[in-house]
Every structure is written in C-alpha cells, then in structure tokens.
Amino acid sequence: MLLVKEEKYMEIIEAELVTIDDNYFIDILEEPKISIPISNDDPNAVKSAFNCLIERLKKGVFSINLKDADKDLFYHVAKEYLDQLNGELLDVHKEMEQYGFVDDGVQES
Image (cartoon, rainbow, N blue to C red; front, top):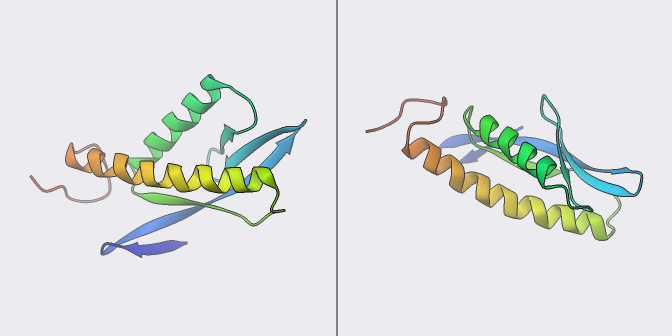
C-alpha cells in the first residue's frame, strides 16, 4: 500500500502483535521479517531490528501500520511504539537523504 506524502509515495508496511510464551513482539511483515520485543528487555534484538529498519530506509521512506487485534494493553503499547518509531524513521530518512545514503531517486546537491 502506498500513501502520498509531500509529492512522494510512502510505502505502508504491515505489522502484527504476536505472543510467544507470554512474551509480546511487534512483527514487521517485511522480507525478512523484523521482530521487536515489547514485553521483555532484549537490547540485542532491538538493536538488530533497528539495524534492519535503517537498511530498509535506504530503499525509500515507509510507515509501519499495526494490523487490528484485540485492543488489550499490549496492543495499545505496540500502537504507541509504532507511532513514535514512524516519526523517528521519517527523521532518519530525511538525514539519510541529506547525506546521500538512500537509493530512492536523484539527490540534490
């Protein structure tokens, strides 16, 4: 799905809230799948997920949209997490464009 943003198309990537053995994750449905833990402290998993997202930004700006699920506490946490993450990803992409680190078009000097 594409969203028009500032005369560019912003890709929308789906994510879902997943529970595995009482642990909650945001699974970003990209190839390869990116999984962010939100119910336990795993800095290596978060670092790895963020590295994958930054690599993905080289292809172009995108937004992550959480699929509807049971609107429990973890759903609301995941929704807020993604709202914050989307803002940060947009800022990082703008900086990457400024320094010529993206592959999505001709860069201005």
